[in-house]
Image (tube, rainbow, N blue to C red; front, side):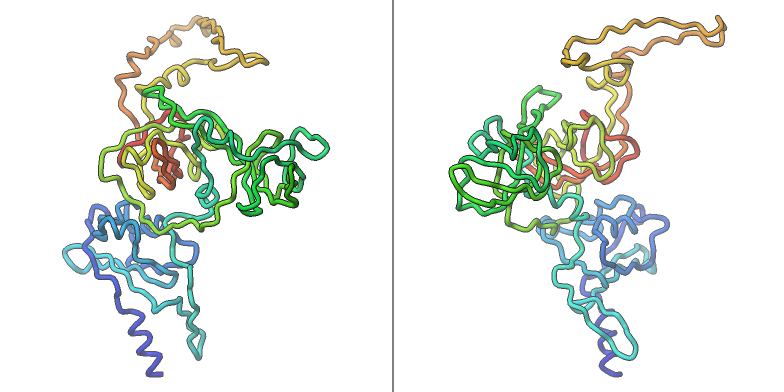
Length: 384
């Protein structure tokens, strides 16, 4: 019994010092304490206490090294909000190496191993961490390519057989299938930042030879002859970072959404026109703005736009605007049409947040964490 009491005293001993929290940063309905459970993320835990989850490093006075390699939080740990002083304080009460569950009349200790709380859900971005996503114009040209498919099928998927030329034998038996996608173009400079590599699936080598035989084990899109193979990454992705705001000013654009959709939403993957050369790093949180003063004016106000016809002609559609009077009533007078010049004077509207999870020299990919409206290509991203 005495040992049990001592264990409980040790359990409730704060291992991380209490730190003052800005009262304005706390949510009005923040709980006094919260016990971390499996499935929690640092973002979700922060959101229980803070109005802005990315301000966690500021509240806990973390330096750059602690942001990149934070003290691990495990299920069973307790985050306590102490309101007794002049300033509210957050502190972490940690269990001794595991989640302790009281099963009367004895206590069982379950080791946690790698069950530390991640920054965001690994399932949301895990598959994207080992994929190239951004490649040069000719970067995939010298990689192994699918020469033919079984029975000369136009498109294949999981379970199908394909034949690959120039497949090396020293890079493992598991490969990922890609196709070079559209160019990522900075809308402000019209400069090509790279090309999006579209992930199609995974394959396993069945037999090596002049034309090696592979079997498609996983497919997210149809795979065809000419698609390229890259060896599957063997390293495990890391989530040991804390969401935080950039230290320097960042202003860029959303240049693409994964899957080439015009819009996306929360948990969607977006490509950004800024990268590590511009100061972006993994864990940075950016605010998303709908800019009224950009070239999206035409796509927001024109009734018909874009490519037309079976061949996808680039010729603009002809639209004949005809005023239809409704019963000739003066109640339906035509208002003054708004022009592009008028649109340019309207302020930008902030409506969401995106968290950067992978960076390249001139581009980055982020996960949309919050959005009150559809996230569209060409929207602004700035410091939160």
